[in-house]
Image 1 (tube, rainbow, N blue to C red):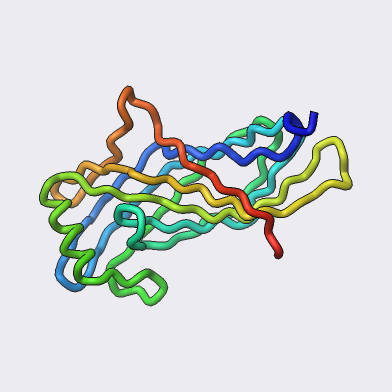
Image 2 (spheres, one colour):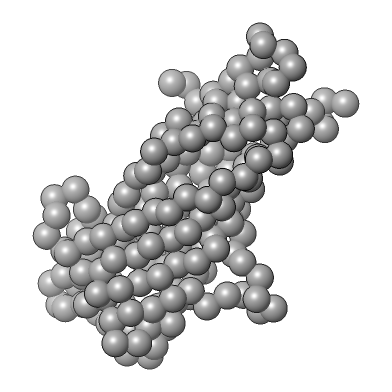
Length: 180
């Protein structure tokens, strides 16, 4: 009984990822990414309150390129919502990651070949609330990892190449108990 009613992590799926104004030089990277992401609450007895959502886009899996955040929202049992995350960097913002020369060179080579691999990592501060038991409430940090997002690039613009068979990209989700 506990396993069917206990907290399950939300399902997170990348529906689309587009790239525009993508330029790379020896000293900076400038780009705008827009990710459309679906978040679904698979729980039958737990409501989710996604209180704070922060995200980073990476080149491959380890090199941070841009940071963004969006407003949180609530998910009832078996409810899903779409969110749009916009990442932008001109290479000069103080609040964005610094991209080192070797990474810029690697990105430029990938761009010339017409396909660049990105990843998105989210940090979602989430409160699980038992729908039928008002006393149970617990905070978790939910970390979806959306790896291996191949974007076909042409003339500084691009879009996600779906997986084989046209499937959207599901993300691996790690859930940790939150102290705050």
